[in-house]
Length: 220
Image (cartoon, rainbow, N blue to C red; front, side, top):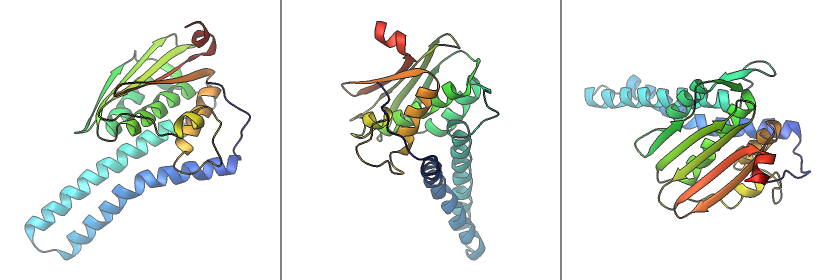
């Protein structure tokens, strides 16, 4: 998958990523506010208990999403910094593993260049979006730390990539990039920065996303 010469203005890229993060976080934060309002006004013990459970659950969700976004989109240290893949697994489980989705993580715990770890997490987001009814997400990292081979698979009912995702991953959007598509476009940028080529395939009710050095893709 070759990146084209399409380029998004840096200010627009930052603004769209901020919009994406706010969209992910505003729902649980709003639920916390609603729960606190119920606690202030409600005298019924059962309703207060329900509100407290809502606050706890929403706070955990907001925390998980923020921790994930910090690694997937944030600077996560200085230029050239490395990230522990164990930390990446932890935030991925916090965000993705729930009653609908199971995450299977097969990767050694090592320090890896931050763009490569960010790529893994962003591929996980795309995989999760491909199975909105839930299923299994499998993450495997092989090869060397310098030249990793990353595979993220999503299997579940009616698994599919949204029609705009392949173009955005390739850096060739049809028209403008909006807040809905910015994450896939950003994933393509991160792959390019990491020196990795992206491919994707669909087989039955499974999606396979793969990132590897371009030479490995050609020889595969």
